[in-house]
Length: 85
Image (cartoon, rainbow, N blue to C red; front, side, top):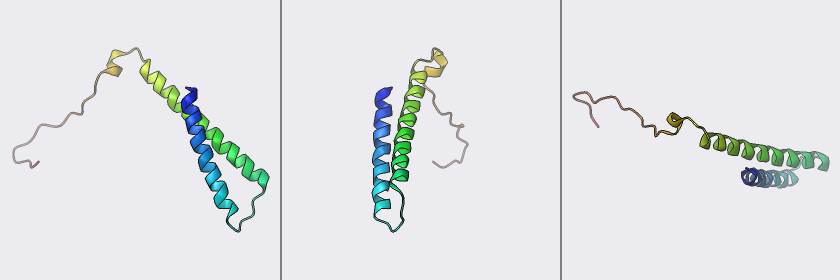
């Protein structure tokens, strides 16, 4: 559970650092304080997203209902005479 959170957090941090570099090379002036907190928030959101994905995956894996784990196939309507395909 922690690993997926760290992977997502690292990806979010990389994106935040990329955006920070983009902002640094534009004429817009943003304080270092604002850039720091935007980077921290982006990394935190990535960690939370990764942990949420892992939690849902574990819930899905540990569901005791056998009907939940049965393979689901899409039903196709019966072919009508004259249908192409």
